[in-house]
Image 1 (cartoon, helix red, strand yellow):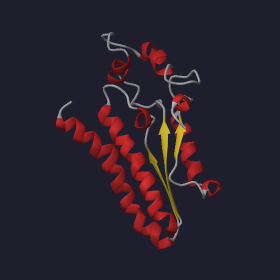
Image 2 (image 1 turned 90 degrees about the vertical axis):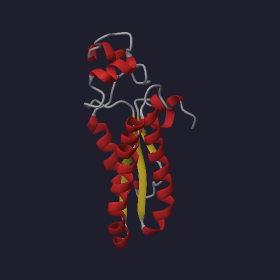
Image 3 (image 1 turned 30 degrees about the vertical axis):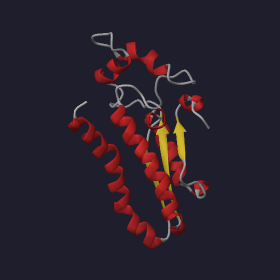
Image 4 (image 1 turned 90 degrees about the horizontal axis):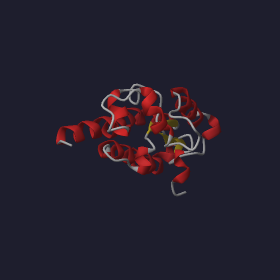
Length: 165
């Protein structure tokens, strides 16, 4: 991978999260409350061949969340991350993503790739829906999650079941 590819991924998926958080923190600190929910990935917990730049960025988001949670908890702010498995979005539903899983097929289709994506998950589905991620985020922003901070929540169809506790 070339330097530009690496840097673009880090800039978007880690530095972008940092900038977004930094933009909202002064207001949250002033009001004495707030909820921050970042998007990491199961790839940030596990690592995958051929996407080390993505895995590194998402691992960095986890470190950022855990560190910031400790810093801002006295201000009534919680900071957490969602770690999805593959999500049914354009990021996954494209020829390049299919080729990562099926490098021996010249032009893999979604139907070709579905079993490969499904093999990641204990629950036999290839990807979760975006609303599944939104629902977990809404929970973390609710009063029901007021004492959850510095946590990573896997919305992962069981992909996380093989990770160390």
